[in-house]
Each structure stands twice: as C-alpha cells, then as structure tokens.
Image (tube, rainbow, N blue to C red):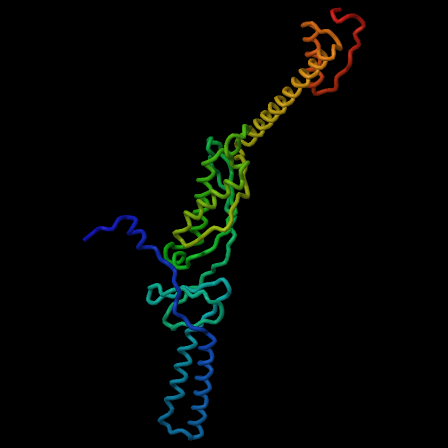
Length: 303
C-alpha cells in the first residue's frame, strides 16, 4: 500500500464548500397550509359523520405531516449561509436568502458571510533593527468557504484574531521603523506597501479557514515607551543636522556666486586675505541663527 505524502494527507483533510439540496420555504409553506386545511376538513367531516370512523387516520396523518414540514423550516438573511450536516457528515451549504426548507433530521448551522471589521490590540514588536515598537492593525475580513470555516478550524473568529497578531509581528520584524537616509522601506514611511504585504500575509494564513481579507492597515505605530524619549531626541538631532547641512550647502553656493560676480564685473580686486575675510563674513551672515549687526570699519581692512 502506498503511503501518502504529508501534503496529500493535509489536502485530504481540507473541506470544500458545495451547494446543498434544499427547497424553497414558500412552496413548503403552501403545502403546510393545504395539509392544515385538509386535516381541519377531515375533523369536521368526522364530527358531522359525513366520513366513516375508519377515516379518522386522515386528520392524524395530516397533523403528523404538518409537524414534519414545520420542523424543516429555517430562515436565511442576506449574506448568510447555512451549512447542512447529516449525522455529522457535511451535505453542502445553502446561500439562498429567505425562507428555506430541508429534511428535519438534517442539522443547519447558520454562518455569516458578511464583512467583519477587527482592530487588534496593541502589541510590542522588535523591528528589523531590534528597536521595540508598538503596533496595532485594522483588518476587514469575511468568510468565503463556510465548510472550511466551520469544520477545518475549531473557532474561526478566534483563529482570525490569533493570525492577525502573528502577521503583525511578522511584518513588524521585517522592516525598520524609520530610516532618516530614505534608502530603505520603512514601517512609518511606506504605509501602502507594508499594508499590502500585511494583507498578503494574512490571506496566506487564513486560507486554511476559508477566510479572505479585503482591507487592512495599521491603526497604531510608535516606538515603545522605554525608548520613545531617546528616539525623539535622535530624530530632533538628525533633523537639526539635516537642516544645517542644507543651510551650509546653500550658503557655500551663494558665496561662490558672489565671489564669481565680483571678479567678473571687476567690482573690487580681492587678494587671498580679503577673499577669506569676505567668505567668513558671508558665511556668518548666511548661516547665523540671529540677525547680523553691521560693524562700520573706519580704517582699512588690515587695521
């Protein structure tokens, strides 16, 4: 006897949804009304002795048949489904909304296939660089395969919550929280791309339960409290350095332009010492944080 591989054994255990053999409840409701009327007529005929006593089984049979029909009714709202089982065996899913009917000995398990919105709890995750961060996600999910949701996992709603937390941890550890050099994909700077990867990760995790994810994204993303202050000071320092670098680059360009124009138009002849003094004064004026105060030199440049 050939031994099935682990993938084949796993595939054999997966349920698959298919349509159930059910009936319209309105048609069975009409049949129920006819049975009730015929049974009432039989009782009246027996009471008026229009029927012989031997026909007393007719009203009894109508009553039992009516009871049989009543036990088979069930109602489905829009975007609801009923998984039908017979003695523990799956016999299909009914997705037709309205009044429905099935044989009374078949068990109906109603399940919602509407979209569900879940906001996960804040969890602490270490990002790619090992920094502790806090993350929370919002996920819109729905059941696509009722058989898998009911029979392949014990509690599909609890399963969704656990997989959301696991997926958030996986994505959070895959990227750094921030990159001030703007050379990497980060959690804070690439919401759409990271959210798309989170959705892909969740779909792969929830497919075993017959559930898909329509939309997801992060509702909370921040450094953990124990390093939030240090990271804030780091952000401020890096912002100051970046601003100073931009300011110095602009000031150097303006000084070069000023010296070039002075030389081109022969406004003044500058030796190396005067050129250095002018560069120093211009850099102070352009890079200083406070307004400059002019100083009147009554003598020459060298006194």
